[in-house]
Length: 509
Image (cartoon, rainbow, N blue to C red; front, side, top):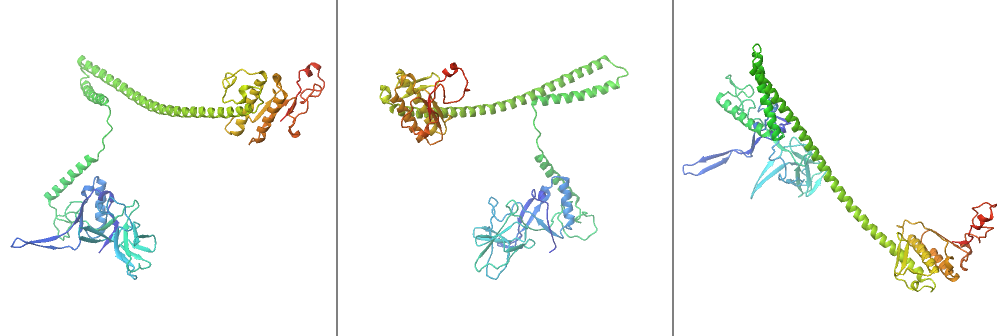
């Protein structure tokens, strides 16, 4: 069978109508019964591609394809858009869609096929013209990525190693978008020029220049009229609607066109009567010109309003976006404020705990320091209260202030989130007449806190009465006198008044 391995244009076949058909002879007997006989063993497919021709270029492509195949002489490939997958139309294809045979251990070749089942009846269709690169093969339920080849001109799958005895051989067809093209051999049955059935003829009467079918003028006319009507319907259905302008603008444009036509008519009349001008004609021209000017100005106003409306729409969209951003930032600010409040509460609680521990370790000199429960402090008011008490002895106020500074530093040493320098210098331990034992006890507490601290830090206590148990290596400054100060900031030769302003003290860390 002569065949060209080329496919009919897909853009035309997509709109074609047709499908499978069978030929059955029905003989009615004298008794009224019928005898039926299938003339064809398999179904054949017939398509009318006139429905897919929408432009003159489409018709030219069909005529060229018809001529290249010599009419009905040579077969060709055709995609049936209603039946081109090995699976159901709604399902994705798999390599196990169709069973094409059973292995025997020696059989290497298997013919692609598709089964059509309804109830207990099944019809097997041979797939002789698959599209190369669209076939997937499986042995049993396992897809085979190699070990087989496909002859796309016959639909025969050949295995390098014969499948084992009893192994089900299955196949599915797919293309690049996971759909398979299953096409069969097709020949032209209708002439694309005269739309008559293509029949081999050998006569000299007037006939179609393509298919040589004798011309039937009435039949040809009916066919052409039918095709023209069908194309007209398709063209009307295919046209896209233009964007609808505002009704008011359309009205002004229509009025402008009418006025322009009227103006041209009047202008022609004026030209014809120019030799004998009349005041009535000139007045009509002026009226038309004024009307055109009014219409032009109205159109400009409307266009300006349209631009303004577009601008308002853009600004509204931007405002909506800004509102959303503001809400988002507001939520974020609220979350940060809540987090900051929690953080401040946690930090104050840590500082309060440390101050209470230091005050409870103080000598029994202040009743409110013996077992305090709450410490309140305010940086804004510059106040510190112990269980609501604000009045203390002078030496107790020194201890309280020093305890606050040490407690603040201790909180920073144990909490890495504190933005507080891990450095402290205290120079008030002997102020306000604080007794020596109480100063030594405070120094002892500070040294204990420093020794247990988990991070690097520095605490400097300037005191004239160091705790006797301080290790020598903890001293960072010698005893200071007016003549020999601890820090040598001033030159050797200074007057006695300058030296008198220096308060010399010993320094420990």
